[in-house]
Structure formats: C-alpha cells, structure tokens
Image (cartoon, helix red, strand yellow):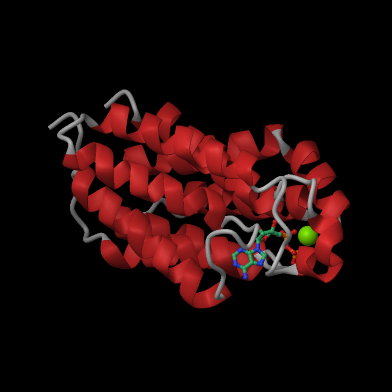
Length: 212
Ligand code: ADP
Ligand code: MG
C-alpha cells in the first residue's frame, strides 16, 4: 500500500532531517547563543551527519533497525542535552516498530513512544520551553488527524503546523529545564533552539513521507 512506511521511506525522512538541520545549522546556533551555549546547530548537524553516514555504510534491513541505528549514533556522537534526548526519541520509536513497514497509525504510535522517551529522560513538561513544546502538539495533531480518517500526508502537515506553532509559542516562556533555565526570567523573549529543530523534524516528515 502506498502509505506503508518502509525502511526506504524512513531513511528518506532521516536524510531530509539531516539536510534541513545542515541548512538551518547557523540559525539553531544563533538561537542557542541567546539562551544556551551556542552549540545546538553544531550538535544536531554532527549527530545527523553521522547518522546518515552510518546508514550509508551499513544499510539497515528494516524500519526498527534503521531508527535504532540513528538513535544509537545520536547518543554516541552528540554530547549535551540534545544527543541523548533525540537519541532516546529515535530508539523508543524503533522499539515501537516491528520489522514490517509501518502503517500511519503504527508510525503515529511510534512517534508517541519517542515522545514518552524524551519525557522519561528529560523530565520536562509542555511549557518548560523545550523541544517538548513542539513535540507534544505535533504528536497530538498527528493522532487527531488520523483519528479523523485523514490521509497520512494531511496528518503530517497538521503535525508540522502544530510543531511550528508550539515552537513559536516558546518565545515568551521562561525556561524551566536545560541550560536555558539557568537564565531564569532572562530566558523569556527567545525562541527555544530544541523546539526549533523539532519543528524541522516534522517539516522533514512532510517532505519525505507526506506524498505517500
Ligand atoms: P545543551 O543544552 O546541552 O547545550 P543543545 O544546545 O544541543 O544541548 O540542546 C538544547 C535544547 O535541548 C534546548 O533548546 C531544549 O529544547 C532541549 N532540552 C534541554 N533540556 C531538556 C529536557 N530536560 N527535556 C527536553 N528537552 C530539553
Ligand atoms: Mg547548547
């Protein structure tokens, strides 16, 4: 079926995310220089470049193996908060997928499992000015659109839009988790770097998977 997400489709998503992260590397770093240590662009680019290189070197056989490889690469290649958090996201997604191509509902359940992994690892909540402020609304929108019977492409569009809205809504927030929280009230007035990269992750899903 056209909307089954196989290893090639998920590989295309990972590749598109890596390409987009490279394109937005400076922007992510500029955001992190305002409320962090100016390394989010470099962290994500190093991790995703390594993930794409690992996929090329050792092509994974199925969706779960692919996402596991991406997660392991991010955990091992990226220091800082984002490596373990994004790494956990992909590892938990892998754990929720079997060897078979995923239908849209299975994919959405895997994204939800990834989100739960980020929460378990980072102990943040929506409103703390983190990547979760993009991830939670994106996940909710994906589930809601699929429950409405909308096709995968529409559901991913809705998720990406919700992620961008959540990203934008981080600007006035005071950070309660991560490095930005050290700034207290001074963290308000800046868009969160991690929420920004998470919005790119869903834009990449629209580009790579949305036409299926
Ligand atoms: P570091 O903060 O270690 O320098 P990065 O700059 O790569 O790591 O990533 C910073 C981003 O990580 C933040 O913008 C935020 O979105 C995310 N983040 C930090 N701590 C947490 C947490 N506990 N839970 C979820 N996301 C977090
Ligand atoms: Mg940083």
